[in-house]
Structure formats: C-alpha cells, structure tokens
Amino acid sequence: MYNISQLNKEFESRVRLGIMSVLMVNDWVDFSEMKSLLEITDGNMASHSNALEKANYIEVKKEFVGKKPKTSYRVTQNGRIAFTEHLDALEKLIGR
Image (cartoon, rainbow, N blue to C red; front, side, top):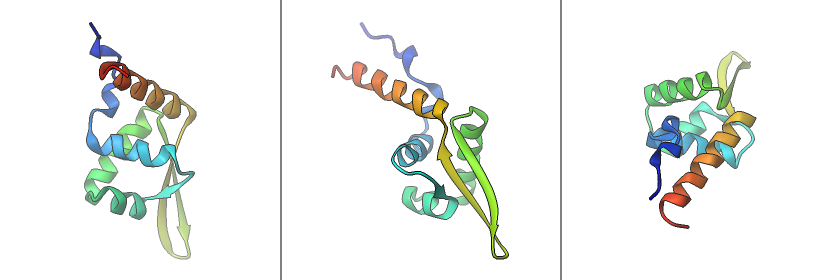
C-alpha cells in the first residue's frame, strides 16, 4: 500500500502545480506571462506565488523596466528538489 503523506502539500493547488511546472522548464518568467499561461487572476497569481516564495521554492525578482514595475519568478534549488520528489511520489502512487 502506498502512503500519500509523501506528496507535498504545497503543490496540492492546481495553480501552484502550474507555476512550478512552468518554472521547471524556463529560466525566468514574468508575472503577466505566467498569469496568461495559467489563465488565472492577478490575485491568484500573487497569493500562490507568495506561498511558494515563503516555502523557498521560488525566487521573486522585482525591478523597473523604464517606469513600469516588472515581477519575475524562477524556481530555486530547494523548489526543484521538492517538486521532483513530489512528481516521483505521484508516479509511485499511480504505479509507474
């Protein structure tokens, strides 16, 4: 029998799963691009990225391009490890 406690609770949300999936295959992704890719609201993007940043799974960079603010994200090494372990646990759960 498989123990589901090996799944990472931080990735239970479809939005967080989506954010991490995008960041695992891209270097830096900006707020607008991520929001568009995942088809989510500003509030959803902000709250879920904040939770992943607090868990040290993503890094957030805020800068100005001209006079406009720009927020970008990338996965941290801790995030890469945690997400890979989560995916491995999912594969075990489905019997792969």
